[in-house]
Amino acid sequence: MQTLPELFARQTATHAAHNAIVYGERVLTYDELRARVYTLAAEMQARGVRVGDRVGVLFRNSPEFVIAYWAVLNAGALAVPLNDHYQQSEILYFIDACELGLILTNASYRALCETVLPQARTHCELLLEETWDALPAQTDWQPPVVDPHTPVMFQFSSGSTSTPKRIARTHEQILWELDALAHALQLTPQDRFLGVAPFSHVNGLMRTMLSSFRAGATLYPAAFERQPVAALIERERLTMFIAVPFMFITLAQTRFERPPDFSSLRLCISASAPLPNKYNREFHAQFGHYIRQLYGSTETGTMSVNLSDDIENTLDSVGAPLERVSFAVVNDADERLGAETVGQVIVASPWAILGYDDLPELNAQVFRDGFFYTGDLGRLDAQGRLYLQGRLKFLINKGGFKIDPREVEEILEAHPMIKEVAVVGVPTAYGDDRVKAVVVRRGPCTQVELAEFCRSRIADFKIPSVFEFREEMPKSPTGKLRRGMLNEPER
Image (cartoon, rainbow, N blue to C red):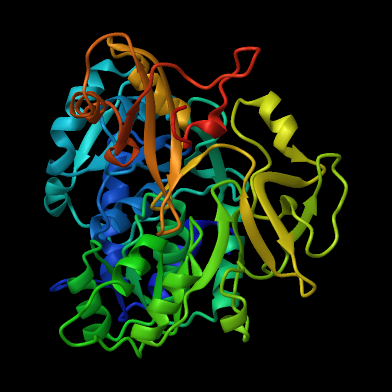
């Protein structure tokens, strides 16, 4: 098995009668999933989609996302998962950056997409989910042959540039990561995955949606709402809960009339942001489970997960590296540091990418000698477990979504009443950040007005929740912005 379509064919044959997806009253077996995926893939080919073409997938967590994603791969195309919070300018950016020729979506996003498509540099069409049931069924369709070393998916990573960086992952890299996760987490067809982390994001896609499929398990896509999610875990006896910190924290702080029964859960895993120990212990006190922290990135995939038997004393560790993954901690001179010494975390992994697309200068800085320089600060203990200590850069982490401050600043700089603006993350008690904009005004403007200005231009999670108005920015004698002082009171 060398490609994802081969994995799809194997799993849907091996587990044909087993439930692949349960979504409310809807149930799809693996055999029914295969029929729907092949039917849609065949329609895409009939519309001119060829091997190597790029196709966007724009849905909330649902069976349709799963069907669309696998259909793109089985048509031989590259999948580009799109965040369902994106606004016009963001959708337009991804259409052009990936040269999308088709977007699979539904009526909820039709108006948004149709507003954007005429502005795109490339010709792009929509294939709406509401038309899928009328397509001629395909039961003996064969996917085209693809090279396992070629890209199968584009994802994007925020960073020090003002625009997201495109990342291409191959069939081989994704299969290797899925194999490592299945082995480390001891996944089986009897597992039942809660699917609340967004499938458009690496955490929900790789560690929930695709890991469930790789195991031949059952996936339960859902929106995150505390009472319905708790009821779903109890009613369906779910075993795997892989999400982001704010979801676990929200449940830990909810006072239920009757404590829900989470005894079926085998593993609770948090990723994409640090989870403070306080809330981990609160979750354990209420539900009887400690949450294991996982470390990964879009560039590297999953690197480690804390599966320690001594979890009570290692709550804030992200664990030891997965099999075939190597960690090191280095100083500014690129020298390896010993145990309990803080430095930059670098990682080598067979499923990590080798570089960003079309960014040779940045690649030379962060991909060196087989290692990816993460920009994370951390230390290793004597047992080789990693503890993260912060970031070298100024990325904002909002509920697991990474936000480049420069992207938000560029939006606000276009407002006629803003003279200067700087955007920073303000740490919260929940382990993530609030987005804060510090503004020097050119003329009168209010927080409400500026938030509304952002609303149609960027995703809602990127919009500052705090606007602070100042007379001037803190700067060095040479005029460089002292970003670290933006969370201090103005003097």
